[in-house]
Length: 405
View 1 (spheres, rainbow, N blue to C red):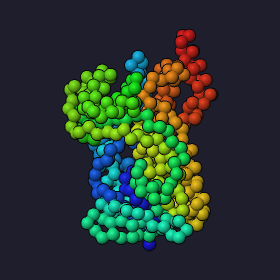
View 2: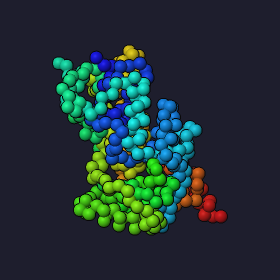
View 3: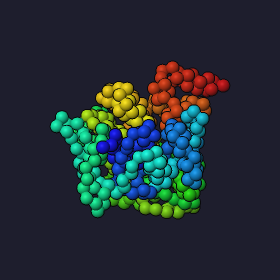
View 4: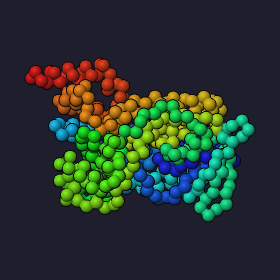
């Protein structure tokens, strides 16, 4: 009998298992893959996520991965551009974009070092329920092994968008937005890039940032209406898209694509109910959105922190488990809601509406506020506070004063 079974051992599951094991709980961590292994990902760990790695004692291992830190952003709209560096998260100024086979291995090893039991290549086939409908464990098997049943006081689904926990528990969708975009990416050598560069165009966006071993991750996003065209000629469409960003295209001509192009048109935007009797969801299993703002890893780390605290409260008796998990869901939704709406707006890859064009124009004359705009993405500046009437008044008043000079 385990205290907690965590299904999925990547960016949400392994930290959740690690944090609970560090509190002394008996934790079973399951994953259908083995580690190290790769997975389709936005890669990016924003400053808010990096700060959690620091608190967990894992940041030095990430820094040692030969993955350069990223402190700058550039949004190039063609006619004008914004560049800057977001405010730090505490003392942490750096973001990182490590390959997942490296990052996830660090996270898995940290969970095991904390005392969690890891079973790799394990497929969960079903959840177990008692007569009252409460989840009591899982049924599944390792590759080539016999089927087993394991019991726990709570089961955590950190198993991605197609979570078996969410399906089996019939977790309802509580908020959703239509899919608006698709995207493809690959890795290139010989392409100099230091910042997170984004080039929005009408219906399209190209982007890039540095990752491990001198490689650049170069991405093309498109409005979902172009998905069938994109899929019919992935390589040709991918390469042509960069011609919309001449400065990046010129650097690519001196580089070499090192891996295949991967991507998806399944950029689902939704919240699921985060908990129920005997179960809870973390990461993409409970909350998934378009990758254009690259929030997935940092969101998974946030969920791990919040959920591990809630489960500890429930298992320790400081609170009822239902009340603790309700608090987790409320904290998740209130923290993620503004970014969800902001992301869905950006993901459409449409020209900025007039009020946003006016804002970007004003930010071009105000470096401090431009940096704070990038702090929205980094998780170091509150979206409601930045877009508050008071702050917008300061930005536009400063722009008018600059114009009169």
